[in-house]
Length: 495
Image 1 (cartoon, rainbow, N blue to C red):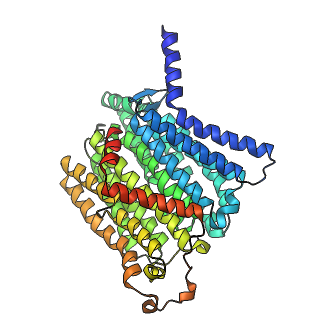
Image 2 (image 1 turned 90 degrees about the vertical axis):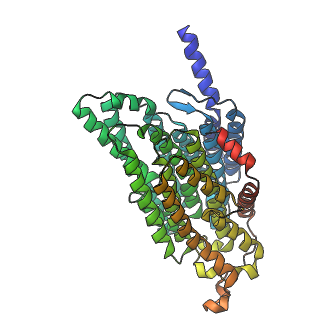
Image 3 (image 1 turned 180 degrees about the horizontal axis):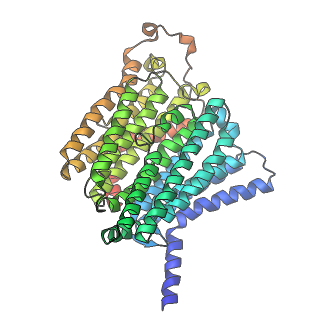
């Protein structure tokens, strides 16, 4: 009887894990093809990666209905996992498409690029569905190994190499802190399971066990702080986002952030009820500090990519406000967090693709004032850019408005007026620096800013992958901003 039950568990886990297995199988297929073809560059490898990511997202969609919240072998098979796999696959696909354009085209055709990107996607999916610290640790090791290889693929200009090496360095530090946290928390609680840790924490009678446990909690907060770009641990991200190649910036700002935020949400659901940790106060402080760092940094930037880098800190700080609530496990809170992640990731990926269209030679690295006159030179790109900025600012008729509305409503319903006021004030600040480029696009001409008109790219739509990413992101942002019912229902059912 026990053997039959164990066999059924293995079969059930294998079926549930199918979307993630598809990603890893695709990576191995691309690796095998590279060996057979003698490591020659070609379109065959991105096609395999593209097919694997689409298959993973599609299978996650079909399995979504059957996920019941069960867990096996340290992994949580709930609808949140299925939706996070869809989001990670989609955002990695966006980054892969961006890498197949401009100066990255030749590098993206190298077999190691597709292999490493797929391993990174698989590792991120493992992190997002892990129900214990060992699963998160395994996913982090895979992600770090893949990121280390991606540095060699996209290592071109010294600034790009420096930025990517910096990301690997800080991820290694995060991994070290996480190993410390897992070691001390296991020593104190005797388990790696995130749910069981809470019960064991209440039963600790030894003072030494409590010290070990609190030290482990501190280490895991530092590790996640580095990974979700929380102040002060995540300040490295701004320099990375500004200097790294556009595909790497997209992977970090969307796929990595989604995976690590989902993992932190699962940990926070347990940590919020841990005794003697003052979890709500701790995360509230980190939330406010991260929002302030992002706002103050973004408001004084003249470079749009650096401004976007600081804006990521703002978005991360807003999500941290939700983790500081006393009921981190409620479906309403998960609904708010996932809705926000979707809206943010779509707008960020679309913005990066559009910046590459505007200035492919400079990797989308544009001074804000250079956008002056864009509405006259290319009204379509000007309008699309404005849509993305409006969504990240949380303005109506975009999906970002509903994400911000749901987040503030959830915080108010849970009785935290202070945090709701912080999120509201942060939204006003984000409105200022997000809409400043839009104002320059529509209300300033090139002559007014004394900029050489010849310095501008002609904004020609020369790259099909970039156009596709921009168009898909814009349609999703506007369509679900005007008709949010089906999107909201899907996310609510996944919470």
